[in-house]
Image (tube, rainbow, N blue to C red; front, side, top):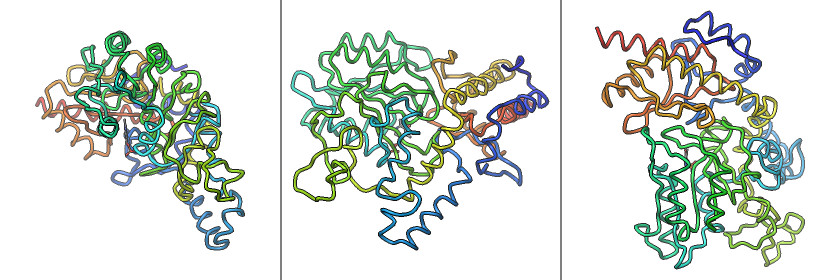
Length: 428
Ligand SMILES: *Cc1c(COP(=O)(O)O)cnc(C)c1O
């Protein structure tokens, strides 16, 4: 347990020295700024590169060079079963049974594949529920599915509206929208963490509501996976999808993932099929009839991109060693420190959009500059120029995400000191 926060380097360095996870930082390449480590707060957008990835990719290239097609069956990790080598650790990270998860495709592709199976609209129940201000791809995907089924998004796309001052959502907002529209909703498709506000949702409580109203439940965990300990199986959600390049540190355009709840493992759900989803034991009989593998594996289309799966395997092994509960413990402290610095040292300059209750957020704080969008943009550019890397989300949000695998308390302090300098300079 940390001593009370202090806004000085001695305190931050002592906190870093006492951090049981401090060794993980050395396993990453930290982007430099002017010859020294930068302060990287963008793990919610693109996580950093684990050093071990390069040698692991080289090893697969070597197998390819030496074994050719036999690499499917030989080598330390034969390619034929490669997605299975990430499965157990992936299941740990999302709180699922191994048979409920599969690493495949990318988020957007998986979202469509899951909707093929779990968005089954009827004239009485045609609608999809999303949150207002949803991430563009989610909105585009959902609207296009509605149209694909011959319905009109003007009627069949329902948005739950933010009911709290900073654009966040209370449970009451969900209760109201299900009470009003529940009988028309075929699928509720909601985030684990909202990308702009950083709000984390209670997946089990929302799923319970959705299921009580007879709606299928899917979650987009882009910002939740590798950030919060999840309990997908227990949540009861029908499916979830995510990408792996954010907190999961698996590289730009990394292989994404999907969860399908065990209760659908044997169900003959409609799906878009491919040979890699076919029952593994008879796949190579190459028969005309598709027999799905039980569980999430049955949604695979193609033999997977081995070189792209390597960083995911390396990264998930690190998550396994660190453990989601220890990561969350550190994350609560680290983001708590950042919040404390903003609220006690920078309150005249900044305001936090993300909910203050730790249970309602992950690593990310979404921050607004009180003086408005133009000043916010100016601060953001000033921070970037100083190697303090966050990101900007229109209209006026700076997202700062200390990732517990590689960020330090000293990074949070560097952010606060840079904002202070800017505010003092701007005032003078
Ligand atoms: C990052 C993110 C995506 C990205 O989708 P890709 O298919 O991986 O490009 C989608 N939805 C949300 C909510 C995200 O945060």
